[in-house]
Image (cartoon, rainbow, N blue to C red):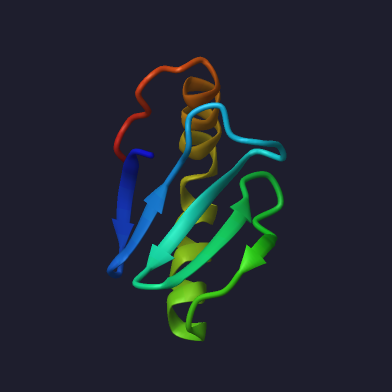
Length: 82
């Protein structure tokens, strides 16, 4: 699972050939959440509130890049760092 960014200490990762809907994983220690790329809704999990706000704001600024990286991961290509 490649790390494509680190946002305020939170690792942003994507799996190759992961399940739909298109999403990314945000991981901080033992906390993990999955965030839908299109809607930026939290699919599962949680982070501390301040980290959650920071990750969602970052994701809103990088939705296009996240979507392109999702496509790359589905095609077994290495995603770009954001």
